Image 1 (cartoon, rainbow, N blue to C red):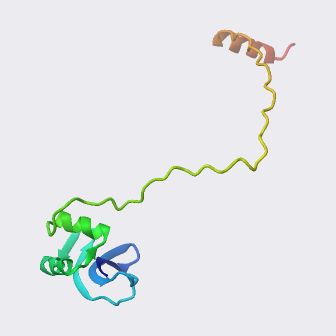
Image 2: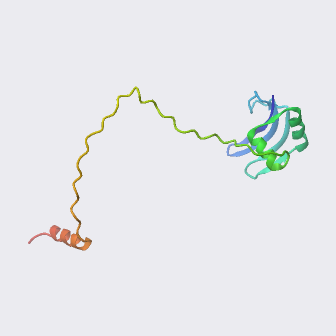
Image 3: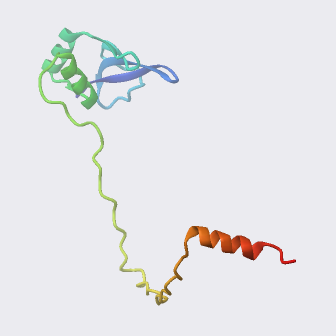
Length: 135
């Protein structure tokens, strides 16, 4: 099955992409492409797409990747709804605790009420008086 997808080119931290048609089993960097259909620069958001050739390949049976599908809809080459290409969030898996011995709770200590605090000014004065050297 043919697939329309992006092939990353460019230097480190300077990505650019080729829009290509390739066999879906081929890796994106193998270089075995059927046809180059355009380019995309994500830094400047510049897109150069050959709309006629993209429509041809889609009519022949090629499928667009999720990101390419959304890009083609945004560019107005095809019509439809965008697809969610982000991974779905899954709830954290609960580990089985049947094999682990049950944990017993430690006895709780009784809470002792704290003594009432005096006004800040009185407390500060008493602290200073207590720390002052006696002569």
